[in-house]
Length: 75
Image (cartoon, rainbow, N blue to C red; front, side, top):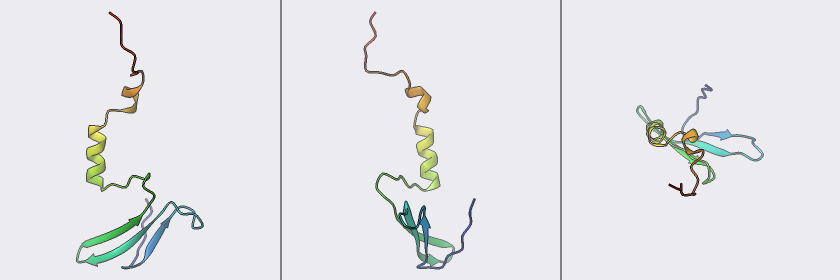
């Protein structure tokens, strides 16, 4: 894991600086709370850890989707 120290208003560029995937900016720091501003394309999903964990427990595994076509089985 990469750990970077930033101050309020400073940014972290994700990906190639000439064509970044996204940018994370420290919007504000109040006590032990940090507000992040993120600029990513819509197709890039960004979730808080607790939301990501919930999504993982609700989504069926990819292997479960294999073989589920739209064809009806004949009796």
